[in-house]
Length: 232
Image 1 (cartoon, rainbow, N blue to C red):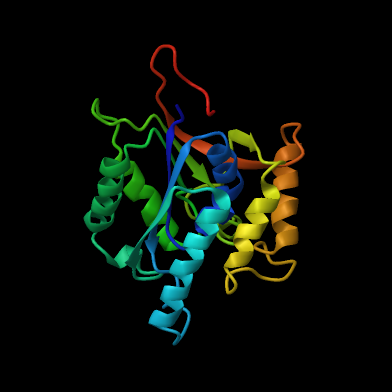
Image 2: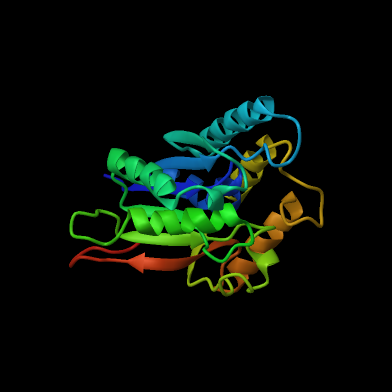
């Protein structure tokens, strides 16, 4: 029986950029992968309005299908204004998802990203999963989001310092395929969200640990009862 995995992302496309290869890898191994996208990801950019929001929501579900997610939940928080919301409101959303699906592992944003919504999402996940006895979340891993993590230049909350590397050589092209679904989010090279740059990053992360391609994470918290451990 596989584990229950939860990916908590601020915007549509963050889940693919941050851990799309691992999502496909874990889903292929029989783990139940669920995605929660907190924000609508569109309205801060221009006049597209609800049409753009609806398009991104549909694209998120299509990307989830490509990567093997069991479900993609969207919550429509206003784009790039999470810091104007009471933190408790964001925490309650995460708590509701955690209560519903009871994940053992969560992938979410690095807390030092340039994007404020990423920062709030990271804090909300930590708050919603405080390690009390009844909390079943055993691992929290923070992912990097190209064009947000590195563009903070380590000046927001410290530099991203990955300690966990997962081999995605066999699923990297599915990540690229899923990212292509987000027609307005991908960019031409040398933008960090271009297909070429995503392949280069995966190659760099892999080369650091002797793999052809990897996604990298900071282990925020790991709790391993006797006889347990590992990432499947």
